[in-house]
Length: 455
Image (cartoon, rainbow, N blue to C red; front, side, top):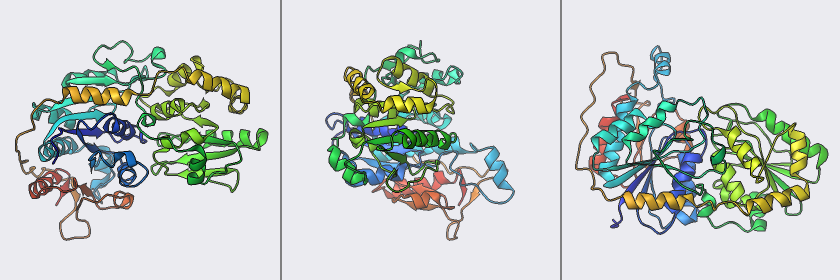
């Protein structure tokens, strides 16, 4: 055990890799001043673990990173039969106390001093854990640029946190949503981006690693996960515009493990970058990019000075991607679609236009917000660990809608320190355990699982 304080870096489930990437950036920023435990509801967690254990995120090897996954209220491990539609209708059934006890148990097991949450809205279970852990510091990393119609009452939950941090955003000055005039957050100048903590790959070596041609210009197409709406039509427009007017260019399309778009490779014109993470290491190899206007994608591309056309997703409830695209275009650091996608692609692939974009991006504020987050976490982390605690056995509900997962049967809950995509895609509920967990922690987790599963 080191003498550094332990910090729990918690993320919501999200629809992409953004929350996890920002927390990893904070964990890898600056000197080793705390030992991070990443606690996430995201099904992208196995991809993150694999990257940190392999060569993809070699920068994490000396950071003593540990991981634990928790199923979100949308995990899909529902009971069968008549209970299934009821649980789908009431997806938060008993989940808030389950999450509360998961957080409490993890804080005790690790001796954590601080919990940092990166997500849109703190869950009731997180707020309940905060009440039970008065000695633990709580931090909310909350993006700005909320949609004007987003539920602004969620922002008032900052009162439960010792500190709220708003990372920098290229379009902050264009914010028209409920975060614009709030004074409850420390605002960082620089955006949080993995590009600040990763050694960029040599452009030629990156092409070889990604299986891309070295002797042709390459356009990166990063349409987003598609989890909140189809991106296939937009991707098809981009591909058609490139193939019709710029046949010398090839297109590399990103597809995450949790993506839902259906773009396919076609030999020597379209290459699919399947589950490449972290892409931030390789972005400098691309000659141009067409991307959704999500927080991480925008700031990674701009930090690497990749000439980019932004086509925002309009299906998000909170993230105001249209405003981010507008702000970046107004600053002259990216392009937006003004008439048609085809004309915007033509403009992007013009040599003089790309040179102008690179010159403008060189004047942007550094994407060093991860250091700002890490600095503030360190300064705040002066509390004492939570005292020993053991959860009470959850009572059996009068109407038992829990998932049947009886020990010794084929439906039993899987308690494991190992996590992969196949496990999360299976029908059996998974209770992921921190590597090297104590016997006491394992016993406590067995009790906590009874909130959701009839074990």
